Structures are given as C-alpha cells and as structure tokens.
Length: 425
Image 1 (cartoon, rainbow, N blue to C red):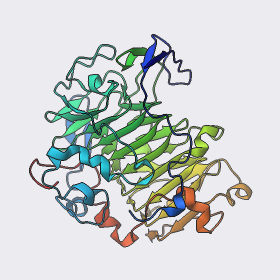
Image 2 (image 1 turned 30 degrees about the vertical axis):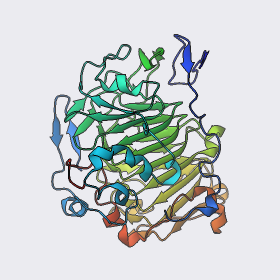
Image 3 (image 1 turned 90 degrees about the horizontal axis):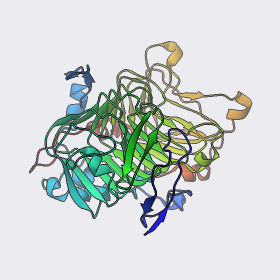
Image 4 (image 1 turned 180 degrees about the horizontal axis):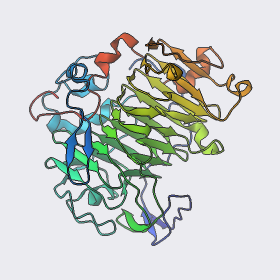
C-alpha cells in the first residue's frame, strides 16, 4: 500500500489536509463501460419534508398504477425478477449485486465485504463520525454492505462522501435522507444505492468533511443534488424515491461513466437529471449511462435527462408528467430511446418529448437521437435526428428493450419498496 498525496482542484473540491493511503482498488474507467456493445443481448410513495417531520403528500396519486407492483414478481422487469421473488432476500442481501444490468452492471458495491449496520441516525460529525452512523460506514476503505437497523430520517450536516466499494441498502425499513446535504460519489467507484427515500436535499460546504479514515478536507459549496456523481464509475442507483432537491435529483458529471439509474420514482422537481458537466468537458465524451424502468411522475418539469457528449440508453421508462420537455441535450450526445411510454401534458406547447440546447438546426440535425418502439400518448412526439442505422447506437445500447406496452407493469413498483423480512419483496 503506497501513500501518495492527492490534490482535488475542481469544484466542489477538497483541499489537501493529509496524505492518504491508496489501496489497490481498480482504476476509474475512462473507456467504454461496454467493450463490445454490438454483442449485448437481452439480459412509493412521495413524502414532503417540512423541516421537522415527513408529510405524505400523494397517498392516492397513482395508487392503482403502483398497486400492480406491490409484492409482485415475474413481471418482466429483469432486475426485480432477479431477486424480489426470493423470500430469503434479507439473508442474501449481497445477491442484489448480481442483478444489475445496463452500463452500471459491473458495480460491485460492498459485495464480498462485511455487513455494517447503521444504528445512529443523528450525531452527524462530518470530520469525526462515530461508529454506528451512516458517515462512519461510507468512508471506510474496505468493502461494506451498509444496512439500517430501523426506520429512520437522516438529516446530514454535510455531504455524505462515499468511499469505493459501498452499498447503501434500505430494504426492510423506511430510510429517508432529507433536509440537509445528501449523497456524493466523487472520484470513487463501485457504488450501489438502493431502497432509499432521498428528498429535500440542501447545499452543503464551506466546511471540513471526511471522505476516508485517513483524509478529510475543505469542501466548497455543493449544488444540493440528491445523488451527485462526480468523476465516479460503476455506479448503480436503484429503487430509490427522489424529489424536491435544490439542484438535480441524480447528476453525473466530470468524466463519470458506467452508470445505471433504474427503478426509481422521481417527483416534484424542476431539473431532474444532468448527465455531462458542460459542452466543453471532453472527459464526458466517454460517458455511458443507462436510464431504465424508472417512473418520471408528478410535478416534474424538465431534464429526464439532459445529456451532453456521451452515450445514453433511455429504455422502458414511464413518463407520466413533464411541463417543458422530457429528454434534452447539447454538444452532440447519442441518445437511444427505446420502449418508453411518453404521456404528454395537456399544454399544446409542451407536447414534444425532446429539446436541443445551444445549437441551430444545421448542427443538431446530425446528432444521433432515435426513438424506437416508444409509445406516444396525448399528442407526444419525439424529434429524431442523425443516423438511422443501428450501428450508430452501439455505444448507447446496454440491454434489450421490452415492448412499451409492458412499461406500466415493469415500472409499477418503481421507487423505494416496502419489503418484509421472510417474504418476497
């Protein structure tokens, strides 16, 4: 184990406080998440945080739709069918890591490591966290599968800085990260975030924060994302309920890649998902992200997602609400939309699914954006561009799309699940 000094100079950033020991974890990926994509084959509620307590604000919204997925299995959702039918899921939690698909399918999380139980939802010391707190677990250098002892609301004082090879597994209890800064995945890899309610996230920063046992540093102001992926790779965000954060619900920037965002329920938010830091950030040209089996629900405005430069597979999602547009982008991203269901708003000026940013038609007409097997409802329409040949979308293909007619069933249990020990979930 060699010690080396690391400076983080890009905002939000750490300034050097100490030398840290670097372990022999695999390097971050700077190449395609899928080496030969041509060979790929098919493989719940919203709460509002008022500062003191959680208020259920959509008890009846989409109730009949989401009831389809309660305690269901063999639905055609390849992730859920991998583990939800097993009544012993609680004693085989790490088996979840074998169920990932898409570009983030190699995310190990804490597989092979010990189980760490969060027993203390409070007492969040960003520099000297105590054993039993979430922060103490996520900063450790070794793989850990992190679970929660009971239902809890975790209000962090600063960003929860993940170290590599960690899983946050909220199954079996109701865990809310809310009312403060939320989760940051910065320059680390192999992260699984599953079964959490993440909402009402605020800015953090202008403070010291620990990111490993041997290092803490000064954080500048964060954006206030639900999940911020900053130079991270092999990341899987699955079955989370996200809403009402200051900036994005899930943002991935600065060379992040090998990401799957699946089975999430997103509501009540403006700029939902940013994939790519800026039009000039060449590191994002290798970004590969799968967005699959999510429900984009009530109160959403735009960016589901908003893409730059890289390769994006948007597959079998249910879009039941947007105010401006659903899928947007700039700087010639490749967007492969397959088997989604798009329900346009009643506003006749907002029927278009797509939006090109910062480019005249003469430029964006060459961007590779395709819609294949998507179901368009209530006047929704997708403006395609670029090449029609499937070979042009090889790097934006990560799994076999199901028919859009199945999207209602496939996404019916999107969001944090209500799992009972000893029963199929």
